[in-house]
Length: 134
Image 1 (cartoon, rainbow, N blue to C red):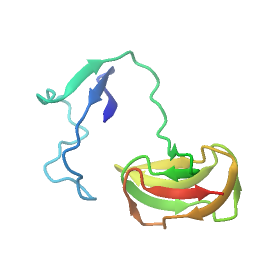
Image 2 (image 1 turned 135 degrees about the vertical axis):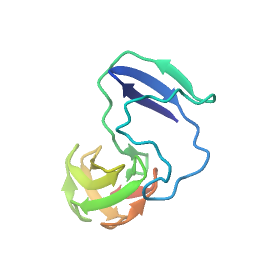
Image 3 (image 1 turned 60 degrees about the horizontal axis):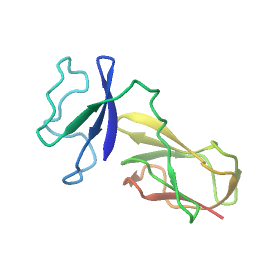
Image 4 (image 1 turned 120 degrees about the horizontal axis):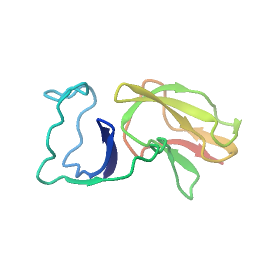
């Protein structure tokens, strides 16, 4: 998995290997995100400095089956559409909380909602189907 991080104004592209999925909730022994000292990369982590482009928006994934999938592990906070609703491109379908931040999950296409596969308060995994279009 590739991530783009910025430390003290310098942007890095980092390749990370996920060894196991962490349980939902706070991580025990995790470093504070407010730390002032940057830890050196682990031996198995490859760090590549990159130009400082604008960060790409966190977007959902669409397949040929016309579904919207969770872009990251999180919890569904709000569902803003219902089956049968017609939506436009970039219309917010769901609001999701991930890593203490709210993320709007927007429609990548214009179309009619066939079904919603999640409920408010439900924890979801990355890649889990959230919404299906007709």
